Image (cartoon, rainbow, N blue to C red):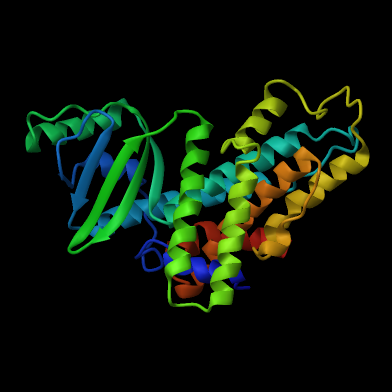
Length: 316
């Protein structure tokens, strides 16, 4: 079912995704291949590239969209509490966090951005290409990068800069993506004011959720508290935790399968339920965007990658 949010956002997706076939190579493979030009001399952790062969970039981008989608969908499968420990919800919370984490990676790529770790092999290959094109250029350093793709006349430009190496880096980039989408949707003339407002309201609310407490890493912070500090009464002894609390977390986690809309947001006063619900809504948005791409072309790269996984989960 086409959702009111994804229907608007499909016009913001990076071009060429729905017509791209399945690829066996990821984005870093393309980076290491060196089939591009440096637009200017890099400065260690900032670089810009261009290519006149858009399909060479889009196919690996689609490969990464599919692998992150599958990782997200498999992580969300059968999230439930153990009957022997009905108050335990630690692993439930951690699994839905990682499902949302992978979904955010997937969504960034759908909208033309790649949050990627460039290791020694990657930067060595890039620097080899750099020395051929710009012998005096400052070598690129390994690390986490946000790489933004933009369509240009005759090709694609890629602008990159380094980001925080922790999960916080990903959530910063995702927050910025939501802001950019807000701005783009606000000025589009394709949809009615009501349609645009509903989408912008959704994006704005999602931004508030992932930046709860004025920290864009709210989801990562909660995950760390649960995973590393065994906090928030997720593990024995549960103290104030009730079976109903775990049931509420389970119900919130199941929202991902619903059509993405503003109706998914509730005002829970419990931080863990808020955390779980926000994760589920991010996964729901990814799911709806995958359905949008598939709706445009049912023979795209998704046909043999993420769609079989999604269909299994939707039908169960």
